[in-house]
Structure formats: C-alpha cells, structure tokens
Image 1: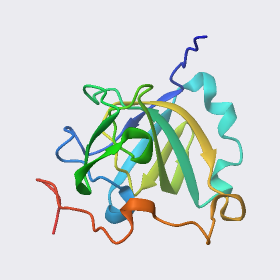
Image 2: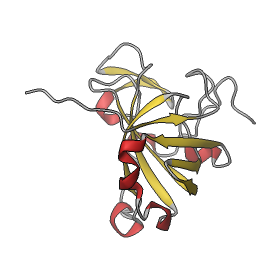
Image 3: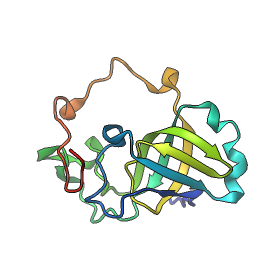
Image 4: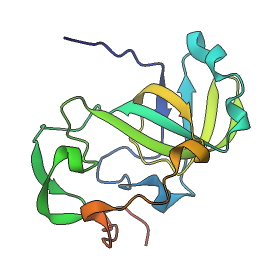
Length: 155
C-alpha cells in the first residue's frame, strides 16, 4: 500500500531554523504567519473566514532522522514517537491549530504559528470546539511538564 500527498500551499513564518521555532504555537500566540494556498485550491477556502481557528496539516520537511523511540522536547526520558509530537516521524506529518486573523484571496494571516518558513501545507480543516474539544481528556506523560525554552525563544 502506498499513498502520495500533494501540497496545496506553503506556510510562511518568521522561523528559519528548527531551533528558533516554538514547540507549540499556543505558547507564542502573538507570532504571526501567512498560509499561502495555491491558486488552484483557492475556491476551497470559501467560508473559511467564518471560523476563528483552523487546523493546518503539513509536512515536516526538515525533520531529520526517524527514530521510533527518542527523547522529546519536554522530557529527558525517551518516549515512543506515537506518544509524542516529535517531528521525526515515519510519515513526517505535522498538525497545528492557529487563530485565523484575516483572509485575503488565497492568503490566510494566522496567529500562533509554530512551523518553519516554507513548510509544505497538505490540508486545512476548521477547528470546531463542539467536535474538537474533549474536556475529559488527560495529558498522558506530558501532564505537569512545562515547555522548555529553546534558544531564540522570547522570555
């Protein structure tokens, strides 16, 4: 079985290196970026501006070596890649939720961006709290751990 994903656009951000990007955009909610949807897919953006937040699915195009068990950004202990959000994954798929600030044609201005500049965009989905929030969910091994500042993060 095989599959092929074709980028529908490109994500533009202030982050030029993995070291400068935050591990979660929610912690840097003021950081702005632009999501460029290729013109042949622009029609699919109809009504996107009715949502306050959107889910971006993208390719970790500069992730590095895939290891199924590795140390994560939040812990000194190794965890399975499927129990983490580490970018070095077998299929290199990333997900982030951003606030939609404004749409201008095929360009979406977003806040809370946490991906590298030039990241290939694979899909966009609306964030719908009624469907996407599970108040009873737990944090697993991440519970109680704070984000560790990375070089380049603002204090």
